[in-house]
Length: 304
Image (cartoon, rainbow, N blue to C red):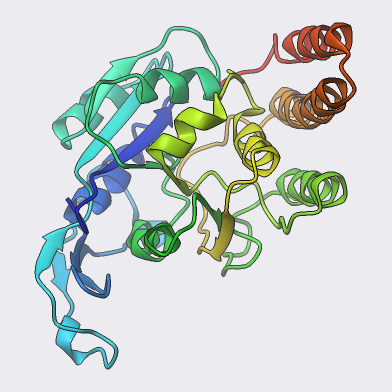
């Protein structure tokens, strides 16, 4: 428990046996100052060219008191629970995750949103829910910075890869262009500051319940942001670092993945905006048409 709140991390995963131990071990090893969130202890980061599917790096302590702004509080473990939803992996993702200390559940229906919804349904005490991919494309030691706005009153915090440092080649051209287009559309339609659809994000659990998430495919991340805008929630972006993922992406690594993700994301934006207008002007028929249209768009989506 950190600042009297339990923190649960959700990881949707499909065939991530090469990377999942890194992600889980780094999350569970994080120790921070209870007063200022300074990272006291974390697992070492290996260079990308030397990473393997076994995490053997030692814990590297950092003297919290040497940080000028640190208030010298109690040293506490940041993450209470890690829940991994195995979305039909054909490798050893589930067993490695379990051995690394995560609670593992299964969801047979392929889909990023389906996996996240399944993990959310696990009956655990959770005041804050963090979502992160299992490909080791983010620096988990940046989690305290992602959480800080929550403790200052934010409802949803998005880790923006656009605002942070990005290793060359970490994001593909389709990812960069797709994020840019979706961000522009959300800025135009909802007049909110959006720079990224980053999957590394934190949200208050009560707010997450208010959002009534439904998308079971690629539209999950954008649905969360748009629903938060529509409900006038306090959404904040913070910069996060991005590194090359381990293994091939199920989206940007294939043509079908890029097409499926584009349809799912843009279709979800269209549905939610159309639905908002329909509700505003009292058209129940338009709401049903919008829902049915996007359901068809997401039929062929695969898990991220």
